[in-house]
Image (cartoon, rainbow, N blue to C red; front, side, top):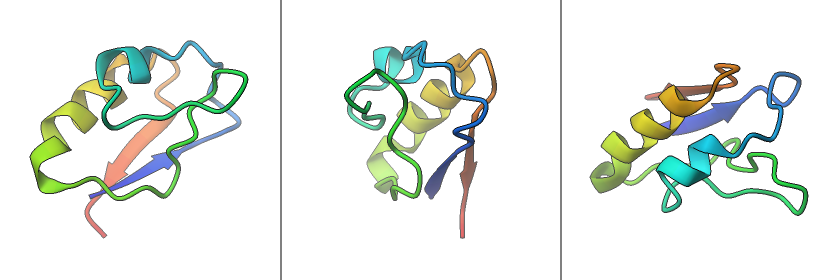
Length: 64
């Protein structure tokens, strides 16, 4: 599974990292910096929860 972050939509609420800090990393100003990161199988559920926590729906997950 791979994380995709639409940086134009991300507003830096950091709710993804608050819900799943083991999956989502933030840049120096609090925006999601996990774009393109691969998610290990054991963290897939956390990745989904973090993506759903994003109020802008800036995070999508793919299996490619």
